[in-house]
Image (cartoon, rainbow, N blue to C red; front, side):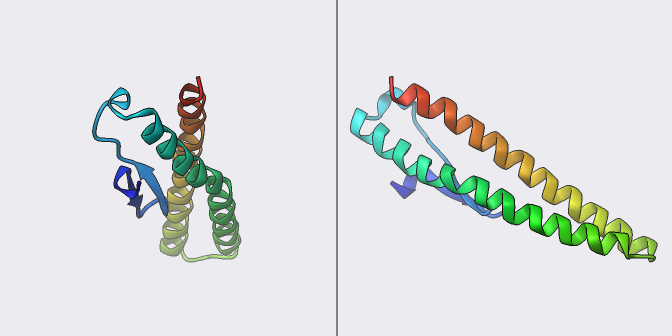
Length: 104
């Protein structure tokens, strides 16, 4: 099953890497892939919450920072973390579409 997923370092989750048409999989394989994806997808909100905690810490640091270069670095880190959250939500929502299609 794990051959259909690859760990994404930036997002810290496995992402689907399906290398053939969905219809080429048997219905059992499709179901196994969907179940595995649902397990991963179910962890996305927790991953987002942990990133939000990091953002809040960095925003606190930023509000107390007087050094311009350090402030720029913190702003960049916050933007990167926010980008990760955005991408995780996209994967979470994409999963809903795949799951709904997979059950019909």
